[in-house]
Amino acid sequence: MDVRELAVSAEYRVAVEAGDDWRGAIEAVAADEGVAAAWFTGVGTVRDADVWYYDPDAEEHRAVRFDEPLTVAACTGGVSTGEDGEPSARPYAVLTRPTGQAVGGYLNAAEAVTGRLYLRAFETAFDDGWTEP
Amino acid sequence: MDVRELAVSAEYRVAVEAGDDWRGAIEAVAADEGVAAAWFTGVGTVRDADVWYYDPDAEEHRAVRFDEPLTVAACTGGVSTGEDGEPSARPYAVLTRPTGQAVGGYLNAAEAVTGRLYLRAFETAFDDGWTEP
Amino acid sequence: MDVRELAVSAEYRVAVEAGDDWRGAIEAVAADEGVAAAWFTGVGTVRDADVWYYDPDAEEHRAVRFDEPLTVAACTGGVSTGEDGEPSARPYAVLTRPTGQAVGGYLNAAEAVTGRLYLRAFETAFDDGWTEP
Image (cartoon, rainbow over all chains, first blue to last red; front, side, top):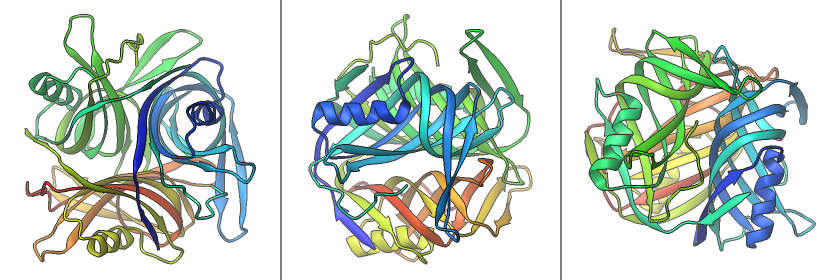
């Protein structure tokens, strides 16, 4: 088990704008602020969502598409630095429908309507090979 | 995209009491502790829940009522200062039934049975117009 | 309502290993690092899950077993010190299926495939009797 003590560099509140890609917005903040490693939680509304499920037996991801407005009732994940040296965000989300029904998984892409995130940036690099969700 | 670096003022653990309104309890803590801006996560049990879904096309909220005990499997949100100068909390939650089925959205009201929250208060005001969930 | 201001002692990122029990891994980190009180959020994948729902009327827990791989779309909870003096973790989780369907509750046990957690440890003891989820 990899356990590492973290040194915080800064903490941010992010208001995601309408039309932004949810994951792309997190990566843009990290790039703009020079953040190589971070942890975040968030909430909001998206217009659609491309959600991934990881099947550990097949060792592959399965995508599910939700083409409908959804509440982001929970979003949790991390930012690390990808092989290209750019920040890579891995947001997981629980999304809810008008009936309250909840769906979710790894949130690969979603068009934001509105969103608020708390992002905590660290000096400590996350170099433990978390390149897949 | 509004990105602001935050300066923490204090952090708290809150044990919500049976009978408290979930959102009201968060606002009461913020008022008692003089907190104008905060971010929180939490878990617990509620006896019923008034959940809102925001429809971005109709630009209106739809309420769904759950008159049953529910586990608060995730609660995430922020506190800012309302137009009346009082703390306003915006909790989003994922709630689960005895079968494990999950529902959720913006948690407008819920009678707490038990709850634990981690609340992080900031000196930085959240004055970016987040007056709607 | 019990509200206590917290003094942080350290913060950690934990990579849960394949085969670890999800809750046991959190307790092992707390024991190894000498953590008596903490709050955490996390994401990942588990191979199965033993989820509890607390029924406040019957005052008892009901277990639901999910014998299938599930995405941990959200995990939130605390660590306190049990009656035996050892760290006791109370993780709540929202878990998702290949279709995106979400289930969840108190995550009593689950075999991890992969997982990432942010854990914030406090000097302040959580001695408010949170011995039940």
